[in-house]
Length: 194
Picture (cartoon, rainbow, N blue to C red):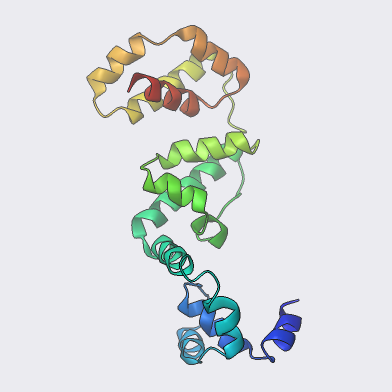
């Protein structure tokens, strides 16, 4: 399909299209000499017409966000923690943190911008996609994991102890029976008490 589009729409000029994509944030595993060469090729009139004129007010803002996403080292760290935890919870190599599908995910980037915890985001992703292979044999082990997660989310340890003593164990037990990851139950409780 891509070859046919290059032929029909771009008169077979692939490098001009690839260069346009690089200049607008596309990442590549190609050698730097190739990307530099492709970036230097001027866009054709077809490219300017089809892509540069498309939504002129929205495109620059969208590209700025994409550029921030792929160059922000803290976001990359967030993605690595997220991917590693998804892999741990689901018990397989589900994600590689360098996957463009992960780094370019607007939902994940928004979670990062809002200051969400990457471990909570990973548990939520696994829960929503049926990937949770982490099991707890007893309520006691689940309750201990819930307490550990809550303590991790609360900045003040003495406050965590006080808040944990007030937990409604029937609700935590219901989460255990429902198969909800203890991190999600702890994050929910943390939201309620804060």
